[in-house]
Length: 167
Image: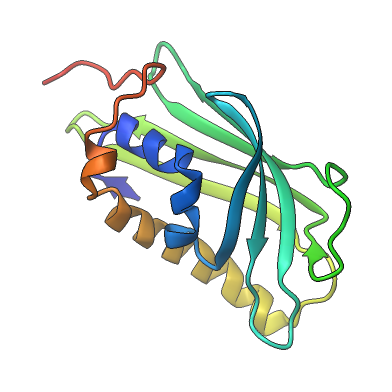
């Protein structure tokens, strides 16, 4: 998607773990369990599923970096399957990798790319699997655009993010 925002606003939103359930589709819980540094966190999250399917949980490593030449901001995510014991109330996502990529465009806008591949564990009916691959990115990106309008993201100051030249 294309967003009229800054790299800092996008970074601030992704770094705001308390807000994740407000905009990440079907996210029930998003809790930082280890903050290795300002750009690298380990989070525990729970993803809701419709009845009768069990909700999923995962432990995710999230690393934010910025290319010093292109200024593209990237957040790489990877499941750490055995980082915490399994919770009997959830099916553990057995594998997941993905990334967010935020690239400056010449018109002052930002190109947002969100890509993920997950093995959800357990069994899922095909109708649910098919809807998840469409609904999750669509609703997450739509909700992201709404959240980015909030002043706390528009006014954020993150020292390690370079927004590029002011036009």
